[in-house]
Amino acid sequence: LRSEGSAALLQLNETPQVQMINKFRKLCGDVVNHPRVQLFIIILIVVNAVMMGVATFDFVTDNPEVDNAFELTDMIFLIIFTVELCLQFIFRGFNLFTDGWLVFDFVIIVLSWSFAQLQIIRAFRIFRALRIITRIETMRNLVAALFDIMPRLGAITALLTLIFYIFAVLFTQLFGGLELSGDYFTRLDHSILTLFVMMTMEWADVARECMAEISWAWAPFVAFIMITGFIVFNLIIAVVCDAVAVIENKEDLEPDFFGMIGSKDGMGEKEDDGVFPGEDDNYVQTSYEDALVDSLSEQITTMLNSQKEMLATLESLTKESLLLTQPSPIHHEKNSEGDEKVK
Image (cartoon, rainbow, N blue to C red; front, side):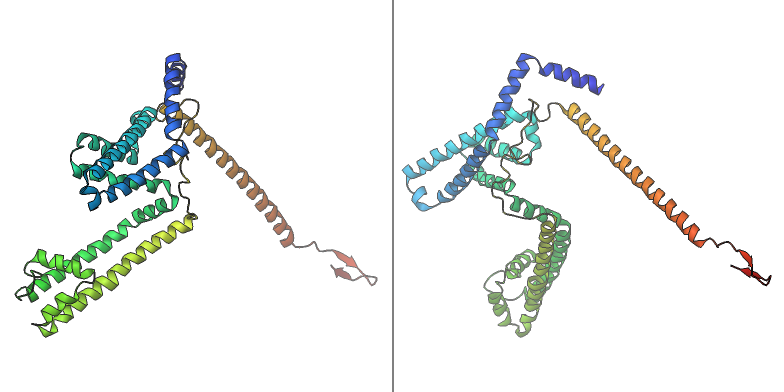
């Protein structure tokens, strides 16, 4: 059935209309996934991100002409990104939604067009700069390392949360009644926020205010800083360094800026002979299974030959050992005097 379906699909692909459509799709894919086009898109992403940052300065917001120029440039960037996404959709079809980064682009662009007057929605386009991660091998490996250590970081986060809760209750009960310059420890949520600020080493002023009324107030502050600042953070750094070391041992992390542009792993995935992503899934699956069976058959044949050679070697060694351990025959000879001599 698979072979018949594949044959019917191949016959359908041979019709002039389908061939013309496939050629157009392949042309769109070749254009949008060309290394130079991808490099141009990345440069535009970086320039757009820089311009969005520059647009927050006063010389832009206070000058209507400059602000309008930035708005026009931003609209041009949006049109170019929309054209790129349309070409990707023509080439990939609905398989575009299987790529997380393309889906992210799709959501950002649709929201940008839908809510063009809402600044808060337009501001989220700055996250398009994250697409650079997929183009730089070293950054991709570091992100993979971060995802690999998530389980261990989860345990450390749970430990840190427990420490925060214990010290928040302790500080609220000890210093909640003191008259300080701010509401640092009056409630549990205020204490948690104060402890979070203290974890960033901004704790000296609060500690001195508490010590002005309670002389021994330094003790819980020092204990909290020692536990969170020097133990938990060092654990997190150790886990991250361990994950990066594992990645470096697996493959050499050479800086390869934009080296993946146009490669099969990146956005520049191309298909040969007019076959596009997801168009001939059954045929591809069957070919993959056949290749897998052939590979397994070769491995099994090699294993059986090795086993036969090993058995032959063991048999030969066994025969030689038996010959060496066999007792030699005893010969009786008579000397000149008629006595028997054993050899």
